[in-house]
Length: 513
Image (cartoon, rainbow, N blue to C red; front, side, top):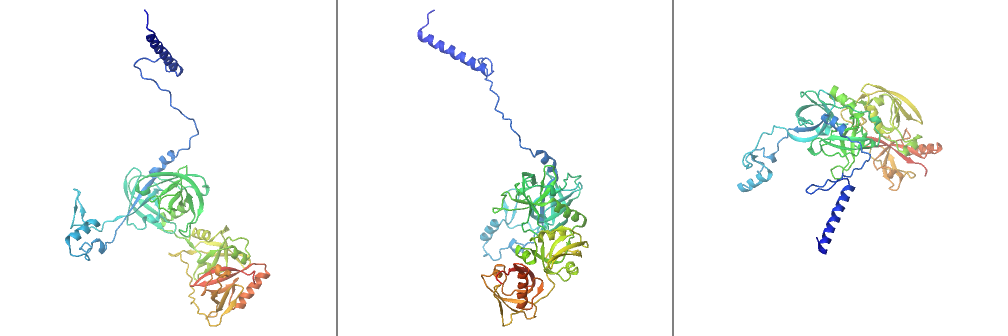
């Protein structure tokens, strides 16, 4: 049989293509291609690489202990909400269409099941509590005690917790502590609860992994992760600030929720965030577990926290103040005044003392002193070490009970003296002064705006009552104190200033004297 050249060429091409297909199939291990059979693809690419530790095991164990906290309160009606029986629109013209428009715009009337708003009728059951807040919390005992923030519950009269599996349970308020922003609730009934323990936060290190669980924006159980960013943060929230800073995402509604370590223990309680926008920017602050545990124990036992009280006003020790007193560092808390009825004054602590230790524990700052004293129970006897007259002394103080208000107002009812006519000038200090009417101290009548006194906040009307713990009755007392400081090699003198019945200390340089 003779084949035409063009037919031969086509047949040869088909044979070559089939051979090529068989060769490719053999190379990838698929086998022979059969007519009507789907091709088998090669395995997908896989990369073997170190895996990041998962938080899933921790979350699975701790999530049942974390709850959402819903807070309700009775809202007193106002005339504006129509409680006067006239729908709150007495000032509107007597126009039925206008009144109807405002009723619809303001949401008055009731919404029936048919989806239509009925005007001229309102639900007047104002005695029912209404939602006022929503936050997070966590169980700390099998029988239903749970922890949250004081600012979550402080306006509430009725409380509901929603568990991880969706159960809603009524709770009662056991106690609150506004100074540390903590509160304890109790759920009665509902069986046994999964609960978590507090960690030893002294072992928490900056850089440790943490997991925050809570109820942001009312979404329910939500988990975020991050690290401990810093310790010992003071954000100006109260006298006992000592926050952990974390970078796990914390938002509105997370308040009162726990932050866990990888062992499932609570290292902190979400309390505040730094946020110019109102949302998370990666800076959140937690009450440390050690603080929370102590406060929560007191709230569960007594419904309130009882703290020790020293009865003194204190201020920081600046470098200038330390120099003027001969201290080697600016650690400690400077006593600006001692209350007449306070335990400190009864024990001999006076204005001008620098408290450096309490029961052998170093006092780094006024905040540290407040935390140390507050950690003791009222009636506790403690040894307080003070720096006075260039040396350390120890006094024994029987602590009192911290009053309801933190304000350490002085009981000394000193009147603001008026300035006599003849002033004196302390040119080296940039001050013009005159004797007070009662003969105690010098009243500042003028301050050189370019002086060190102005830089340190001294103002006309301030009363200089003492210099380097010595009473001041005239300018010669100040001159003598400055000369003594120069002889001792000190570069500043410490002035006690009274303003509006409050005392403080200011260090002024004597180098120009």
